[in-house]
Image 1 (cartoon, rainbow, N blue to C red):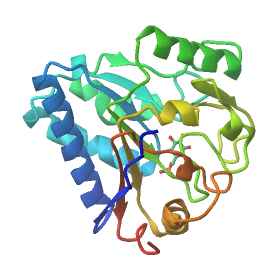
Image 2: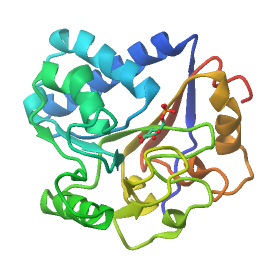
Image 3: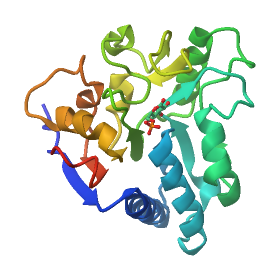
Image 4: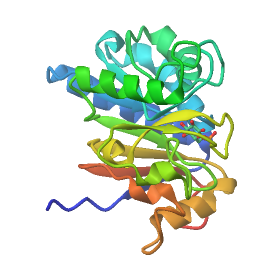
Length: 243
Ligand SMILES: O=C1O[C@H](COP(=O)(O)O)[C@@H](O)[C@H](O)[C@H]1O
């Protein structure tokens, strides 16, 4: 069995510096992959620090040489709300950078105005992943909640135990909106590089629990995700304060 590499921890003074560093590193990775003739698959996340990273990608993109039309973009989770809702992770990302950089190959779970149920949305997203021959992301970025949730896998939730599936329908999420679609642990763990993006003191204990030698995935779901080639925790000083 292949060993998962030890997680790397990169601490930046504040959220702004973290966002600039992650955006720069992502653009370099994508540019290198494209120069080598590879079509990069990148997993995006929602949330506050992701928004800052996306803003920095938009700012740095023009000088990067990245052809965004040839990057395949996915989401680790999506909120099951109407297609035009600002709560959709995809809409947040579109507003922050996808539209500006000219991304065309953007995939997420269908909205509540497009399909009848969150289960249908989860199945459709899994079908899209399968039909695109993907699911092995080059880089997957993930936020972490103060409770240790990752994507839409929340502590103690039934979704944590789902196996032999790419996606899972989530009901009763403790963080609104209640209905979501998430990639499962199995799917998240197919990524080559997993980058956790975490800022703020409110998340320091979740980071500590995620990186501790002992602990349970049920209590801190972020413990259950690692990249095949690398796992990097991009933290600001406040989020790193208990590590
Ligand atoms: O609900 C979600 O929350 C997490 C973290 O968001 P944050 O605002 O605390 O940074 C996010 O990673 C996830 O994609 C999103 O759906």
